Length: 196
Image 1 (spheres, one colour):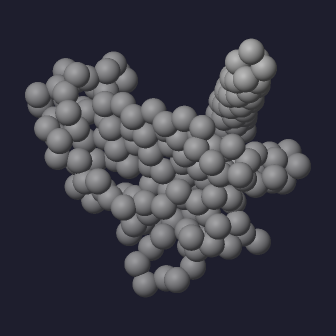
Image 2 (image 1 turned 180 degrees about the vertical axis):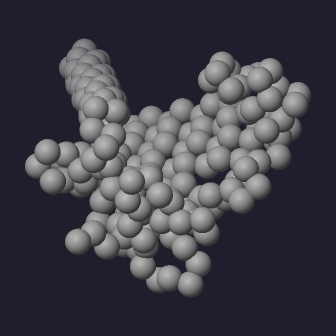
């Protein structure tokens, strides 16, 4: 009887620990999603404060873009958003398509301490076999403060972001390589961004 009681007590303890860990994970994810939404709202509200930079051929340093006047030879664009305390909360990198046949963006979202809390990659291409003529492949990843993945969402959608029930292999996506940086310092270094 003592053995059965000990076994049941251990089982109950393990179940409670697992339930507690899941509750913490759910709470962290909910908080992270809320932070990303706040950054999105801040981005819309303070759109004019976004720092614009361009990578151009032959220059090691990025070029600051003023009044939306992008250099003609821009290879990659960068948007950086700081909060009212001067902390970087958002960086997007977007390679430029010379032909206009595709559009790609890689977005990093950071918490108040500069840790990556979310990464969003989206690629859009033309395809006449899809309603609206555009197909989008996206990846959204959420992270905790230690850069441990909390959740990942992959999607395939049309021009109006309605889900498409096909495989991404049926489309001619570029599938460029990209890096998900663990924090703002690594992201700035990786993108060769120097802010003055």
